[in-house]
Image (tube, rainbow over all chains, first blue to last red; front, side):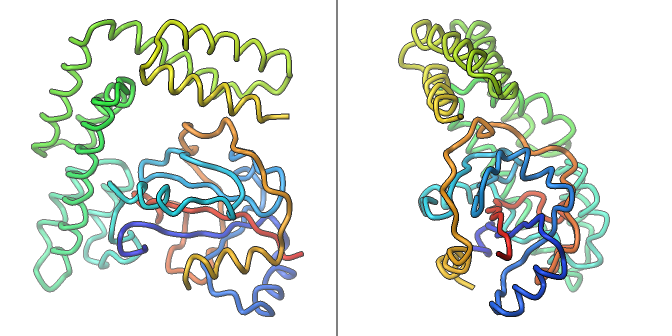
Length: 243
Length: 61
């Protein structure tokens, strides 16, 4: 799936010497890196080994759990909007494009890539960026149809910087206007922000988790059959699984 | 290396499956501190920018 946009990275917080010996002994061939301070594992709630996480192409955590429970369809769903040509495969001449891309300035990255001479490999970079931008706008239209107003609002906030000079900027701004004009948009956005806040707070005490679940149940009743209700229900279940 | 083979290797260090967590729906921190990238041409986590990513935590024991 690499050519479709998926990368796999193994991460360990163990010591280098023991790990290198183990890798050599097992003849493991996969990409790996060290997390010496363990911060990534803490962020992703790793409580035991093995543990896995799926991250979408915009850095959003979409799943965590046992690697044995990964659903291939879930992985495939992540590929829409992912960069098909990883940054380390971009030609050296595309340095300016890469730098802009990493800063989140996709429009500038595309403009820089288009400046490259044909034999500098610019066409492949241009194709990869164009495909990603088109897919991301398509995904955003899907989120709008699902009722995920917050995703549209968040994308619109970043769009001016991210997609400057691209026709997709106008498409995203048009979606944002549709959100603004939708019935109960302000209430729905407020409910989504509340769910986001509760998710980020990650209450460690049982009493606080129960309080959060009560608030989420209220949102379930207030917004039945909507994307808000779906998000609230998922978080209620996630909080119930935490010990 | 096929994904299934990758998981099989990790099975050698199997532990208990962890439940889904409330981290789902959150964005990774702007700076992810990883080092010594090995068996890849990536040299920093930044190089994975824009890619869909499967992160597997493992230990040698």
